[in-house]
Length: 179
Image 1: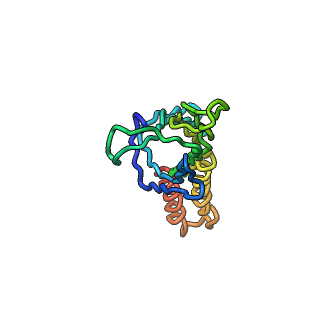
Image 2: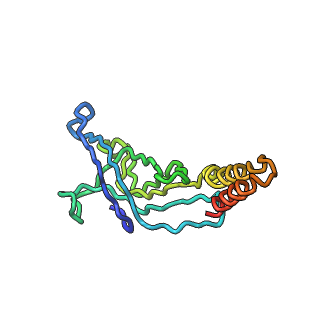
Image 3: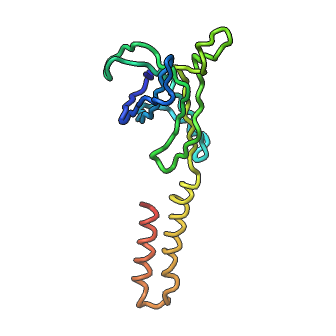
């Protein structure tokens, strides 16, 4: 459950590991794939070298009786939690996410029944940085190549036979750069 965002779970595979399950604990292993959509205001002051920190706010892992219910039965006890950030846009480069644990329970000597450290609530922040080489290749390199190709008519002999061809080649180069 994450407030303020639309979350779609496309794939969720959870299975019970019988080798690690004991009389007092059940070990569930699983991977879930989340597509998170929402709106974030990007600060563009350092374009094209800007970095963004997208706050996903509170992520709470809970057990629900069915997939579409708003209420939950009880919280999950996660021992391990990893976030892999990817970007579908080629001009953004993802970095490792920042995860803050909200309700960590550490093992104590007074309670021998609590063995591993676990939590169910996390604050997650995604880190993205604009890929500066993307703009270098997509803007400046293409502009330089078009300008170089537009200069090729200078190699044609300066006679009256090639005036129309030279003028057409210059016009094509200029129109390509403008568009």
